[in-house]
Image (cartoon, rainbow, N blue to C red; front, side, top):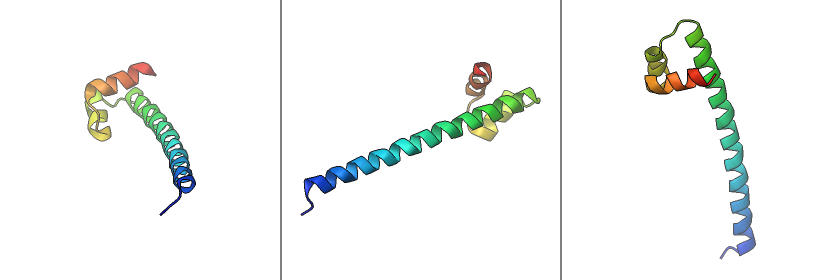
Amino acid sequence: MTELPALLEAVAEATDELRDAEAALDRARGVQRKAIRAAHRGGASYALLGRISGYSRQHVATIVSEG
């Protein structure tokens, strides 16, 4: 049977890994949003950007307006 301290250490390690993954996801979203705004400024429509990114046109419009 595994002892409680080892189980708690596993929880702490998994939590650290999750925090790192969430931070990486936040950075990736920022890069994507910046790219969406740049593509829109370059002439891409909300519909086209939505198809490429998997977002609705409305969500793309929100991303563009936030920039």
